[in-house]
Length: 256
Ligand SMILES: CSCCC(=O)C(=O)COP(=O)(O)O
Ligand SMILES: [Mg+2]
Image (tube, rainbow, N blue to C red):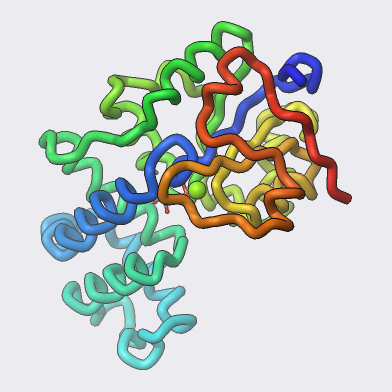
């Protein structure tokens, strides 16, 4: 079935495990943020955006292993302790919004000084080009901050891919395994949910998107988590974007 037969107007892409390898995010980006967080915080400590992030991080510590050690007042907060807390959140891969905002600021320095280049699979630029040529909008939805999303696509190994992208969404719109997040995205895009095709590697995200009425397709990139037989039966599966470049999408599997 083609995207036009599906009535698709927007392709909504996840990043990690979809456009970009999990290994780049976990073995390059996350270590870069962990190595540089303390230096970044010390250098930017007096900036308003850093103060806001630190304050927001203090609101979430009580739900973590840091609940007994990070219960200081904002005025007494220690850079070393906050840096340790950020490294802990990264190690746990907790998608906490202020930590994701902070990561984006740290990565910005790495992209600017040439230490980082955003990984995208080789089929991604061609698919972006084909979808734009066919009049589809391409939007991004990732747990990484919007700023981090713009950096990865703006400084990718395939060049600047930002011109293909019309909209960016992060956890400010809601978490990725919640139906409401996809309803919010459809509302902001002013499209009917069924006219949005969401591409992701995570079945819980695909299920949440589908419960909001979006079409969902799961990527099975090298290094992505294995799917159960049930998940394989429930969702459309692709190993890369090539089948979508000609706008031929796999048969939709409808699950109530
Ligand atoms: C914006 S690139 C970094 C991606 C990231 O921080 C992350 O947690 C991956 O989340 P995704 O929702 O893209 O799977
Ligand atoms: Mg992903």
